[in-house]
Image (cartoon, rainbow, N blue to C red; front, side, top):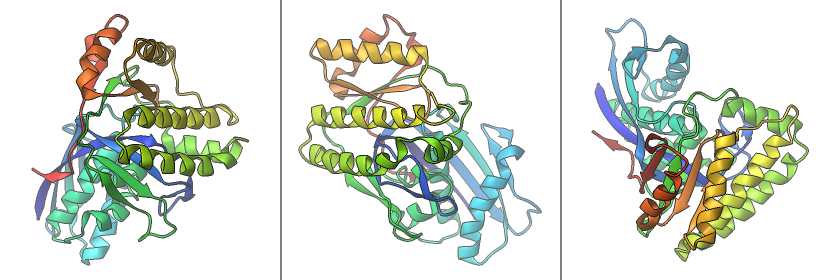
Length: 320
């Protein structure tokens, strides 16, 4: 019982921040993302009754620190199948881990789909999204290519993801890797702290839902200018909410602000460019893919080549 799957990272244009149910990973608001082709995870799983214990390897190195999370996640599927076979998981991340570039999204989407295939569970992507959500919330969106909505829901079955648009128009991102190291405050910890202590947080879920409605109209119209404006404003609201937590959660770094300044300069020059940021310092610039090299050339005046990645729209998670 063996399978290997590749899943791509996604970057949320409408963020989710905060959970209604920690155990089931049900969020406080719905969200929407774009799947990217340049960032992905490849994961191979093998189940056997002859294995004596679970094992997890990340980028070729045995990772006992993450093993319990992988095992607990796999238990969801073992229970569904009615087996107790142990598993060996080998995962390679083509995304900097825990740096705010959605590595956990692609990782758990790849792991969940590989388990689904290897155990012949035959779950549809929509059904599977309700399970991978419990490994990493944003993984529910990485099962699909294009533009994907994760509907908040209120139960295991109803909190799920669906593709809303294949994004087959001129859209892409230029990713500025300000810092690829693991962030000091994890998203999980940051969410809890924000929900508990930020006086701005009560307004966040309803604001995010309003932004989602506006975003879906912009996507339907393939209006990149509107998509960018809504995404940028949504990201700033999320970061403002985090900054108001006690103690404050500040993911932005000096180089993040440098990249944001260059985005403003690009817009002044007539280039469609808007930024978004997740729980990390890295800046993602929403743009016309056809103009990405122009944006990269501007960034290269202040950033190194290896700090800039141009990416188009990523595909569905797939068996390889």
